[in-house]
Length: 400
Image 1 (cartoon, helix red, strand yellow):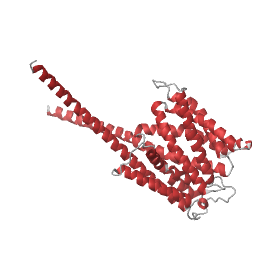
Image 2 (cartoon, one colour):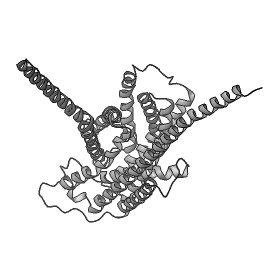
Image 3 (cartoon, rainbow, N blue to C red):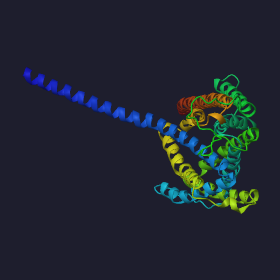
């Protein structure tokens, strides 16, 4: 009997150890899927964005491609890709909301105007006058601009005693200081320390980091205007998605409207029809890669990460472009890269994270307030009901 119990105990311990090991393996796989993969994916997305930005800068500076034509071609190809993809993406949705209603078409046309026609044309025009490091720095102004715009529109109330509001104010000031610094102070040129550095003067140069017809201040102002336009676009998009939750169909529609509007703008800006001709060289490659990456890869990865980690998760990786662009500038484009641009972009990134932390802190505070309010109301209801029951019983017991 004792031997039998000992055997059963050993078997139970071995089963427990097996379950623990399998559970540990499952937990390890879950940690990889939920933590490591989303972070890696978002870092790769930002790195690819910077490399595509450098390639786009090259096509405009070296090959002379018009930024307005570039926006038209990339969004036209994105619309073609998104047409089947959006319907396949939402094919299992139980409720298929009507798309061709006047209020929705008005909203998506406005989204296309602000997010594509205005923001993208301003951004790529700014890129043709400056460099990708300026693009990274100015893109980090979006939380600060959104906070300032929300104050003017009275969407939020600023409480100077709360940590969230204090952080958002400080972060906005840091971001604005970084933007002014990146606009008016380029700093000394990075010196060439290695013969492996690529130089802008070399005729066989395949990529450039800054525009050959450089107008730094104008490029910075164009990027700032593009970032402010994106803040307005985010507000319009949030309201549209709340009413029409089929996200990819909305993306397809506003991309299509933005393509049509951008084509009209390009025809007005570019009088020479020869700028519309695409050669079988880097121009076509950059247009195709930008369209595929922007319409399919980046949007799909971001939505997957948001489902796993929350809506604010992709925002934390936006400043990754600063060290990526800095590394590219230092290693490959030493003579066209400036210390002032790098340090100013880092300041913008610090302001970005400070403002974002304050926003998340305010959101957490508001959720706690709503939760405590609902809990208090839930506690009050039974007490009121008990009081009403007692009053009814007293009325029944009292003589007429």
